[in-house]
View 1 (tube, rainbow, N blue to C red):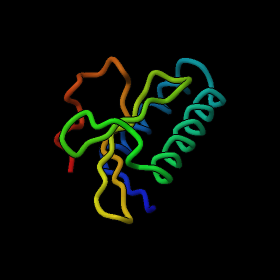
View 2 (spheres, rainbow, N blue to C red; view 1 turned 135 degrees about the vertical axis):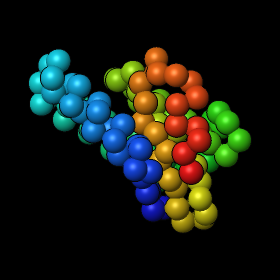
View 3 (cartoon, rainbow, N blue to C red; view 1 turned 45 degrees about the vertical axis):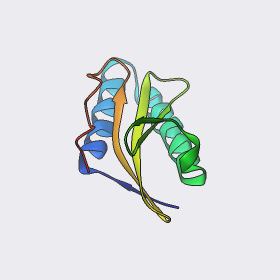
Length: 98
């Protein structure tokens, strides 16, 4: 399964990484990106396994960081990551991304 990122999702990740580097360390930022990559791999392996939170949009929560990924299954071969957001962020953040 091919994973593509919405530009906004790429910016979401960059924002989180910069935050962790600023408040703690590059090592914490690396742990965040490592966990995110593992969870995106899970999405690629079994995209239909995660709950639908809005018509056509599914969600997977990270384990060690208070973030989740919203994504859309585009076709049989492609998943699009719409947003990577903190749990406390506005619930509708990223839902309009296509």
